[in-house]
Amino acid sequence: MLAWPVSSGERPARELLRAEVVYNGLGLPRLGAAVLVEEGRVLAVDAAERLRRSFPEAPLRDLGFALTPPLVNAHTHLDLSSLPYGAGSYEAFIERVVAHGRSGQRGLRAAEAGLAELERSGVRIIGDIVTDPATMRRLLASELRGVAYWEVFGPHPDDAERLFAETVEHLRAFRRLERPGGMRVGLAPHTPHTVSAPLLQKLAALARQHRLPLQLHLAESLEEVAYHRDGSAWPELQARSGGWQPSGLSPVQYARSLGVLDARPTLVHMVHVSEADLRAVQAAGCAVVHCPRSNEALACGRFPWALYARHGVTVAFGTDSSGSSPSLSVAEEVAFARALHADEAGPQALVWAATKGGYRALGMEPPKVLRGAALSELQAWG
Image (cartoon, rainbow, N blue to C red; front, side, top):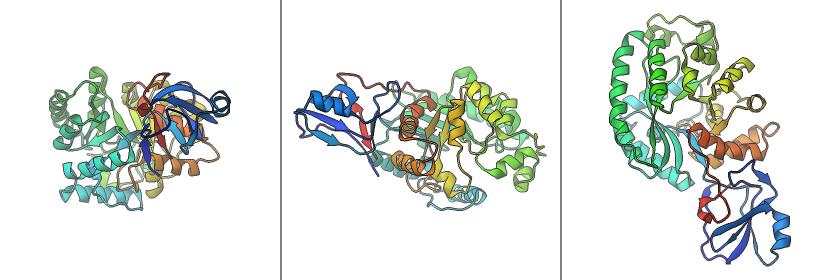
């Protein structure tokens, strides 16, 4: 299932383009709609049958599942693109990632492979987690749009001052490379259990002060919940964390207690959440990135889509890394989610999340494809 930009090519001067879901960025995605185009320009978006009656001479082309503004992959790890895909436990996956990084295979070369795969899938707007300066420089010089989030680890409180100072220096250097209309520099404290409380607070305050986009893995696995609740998981991590004391809170409420939600981070995964968690997230104005294939591969559980819809939380889609997802295709991510959430999420909600939700998660203005717009501003996928 590939995504491709719509092109007029050697098409008739005027034609109707129909898909199961049509969305021009205004209001809600529409079922049973079509786009009337002429000489590569959008003339109208309306009910397909109404357009056919009004323009009976225009040939009808069916484009499949969706016709929308460009898709957004709101959470990737391009520098892990050489990590082979594998299903298993979340804990085993983290061990694989650490070993892969120590082997020297995580970096620019892997990111280049990921960039090539993204280009084949038709996605040019991303939120990428970056761990090495060369990859950051490559992204900032690229034609991509979105956010390159500099990732920070540091579970021991004694390391907080040093790691914070190093992070500030990195960000200063990276932000000098930002270009109008290009990728922005963001900040990604890995998780509240791999970044100490004092460091996490400093990073959140830095993001607020400088209006940096912030992205945080949160509430991904049951072990994470247990680690925060009573410390009954991950004894090795506890040993590296300088006497970690569980807060008795959920991961979301722990982040809230440290003031992290005040920086309006985009929260990734968010599988194990409660009503109270989502009330806090919605009140803070945080968006959430859903990575269903990664959740499935790592046995993390099922994202409670209906709960998010009930609380009006913005949901976007991300593919996570190649190590826990079989591809970087957002269209394939949505197809998986459609089967997974068939009883909770209709095609309109899924399309909204893959487009407008993604732009919002990255702090970008969602595009609106109006009359007179170039057909190339739309993407057919699925």
